[in-house]
Length: 479
Image (cartoon, rainbow, N blue to C red):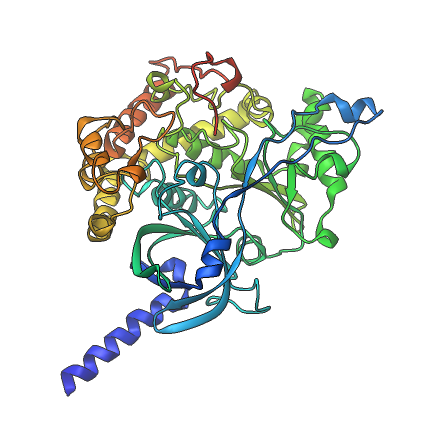
């Protein structure tokens, strides 16, 4: 009886620590998802949505930087779902599939990325203070560790960024699935008002998510021209769109003297330089520095500055390649993007900012991104998730590739992978598109640190990556 009481007491402490803040947990969380058959049918991403280009304008400024029309996207739908966690049930939680390439390139897999919205159908409902949760399915990442490791680096340098933990998901659809183990996911914090209040102490500023646009480009003087490229994520009444338009025009039209004098009035430069240093060591090109998306901009009303917030890091550690695999490990630290990016170009020609950025790079490779430090963390996390990975029958890669990817480079089309493609899950295990090699995590860190150290000491000239639209038409196109 005494031992039983002790056991329950310890369990209470463990679960209490998880519930206190689920994103501070060092355990694998477990969620049971129960969906009615009709809702399961309705949430399947079968429909497509075509956004039209903006209407023509007679304003020359509005036409100056007009990008091409937005391409076709998958249309997904929220359905009411019951979610069980730690013995408690949340009723009518909104659930839908999420993602871009991680959804489009896994059409036959049961393990698709998901988003939970606890407030969708029952206003005010939350999950221990959180309204939305994101679940990434490990697309293109046999290690399952890229997002977790990358987000941790941002947090260690105090750059505002979501937190991530691991989670196991189980699916029940009456007559179809009975507690089917969907597999191991990475659960990621939503960038929303809760996130903003936590990181900035306010949530009443403009929050946008730029997408389908190659850089921070002004589109004229009317907010209507921006709506489909700078998606508004904050309440309209809190969104000073005029201030954002002024900032974008300033980036492009200010002369060098004006830029040096005023950039910190508009933008949190110190935070961005740290963000850029982390992105550089990670060679994370499915970002502002490559594809031009997967980030947020937030106007901190306390400082009156814009801040960049990273997002969607599954292609970190050199996993976005675009036919330039042999150049990624030596990517030039002073040209840390594919093609020109206005913030990068203008900041790094200023000696003080370039010095601060180099100092951040040196600190990273000496401490947080040092090969020994990273190897210990990679091993710790791999040990944590190994059992869940082995049991995951819907994962994109084999268990053998999970184990090898921690320290060895892999070909997505190697013999071991082809053998597993002939298994019952072969449709779920197609080689991911546009990957020549999947860098082993430990070997990537070692080689990237060696290159950065040599470049900082001027013993090596880094390799400048080609912009996406300059690559040969060999079928390797951005997602």
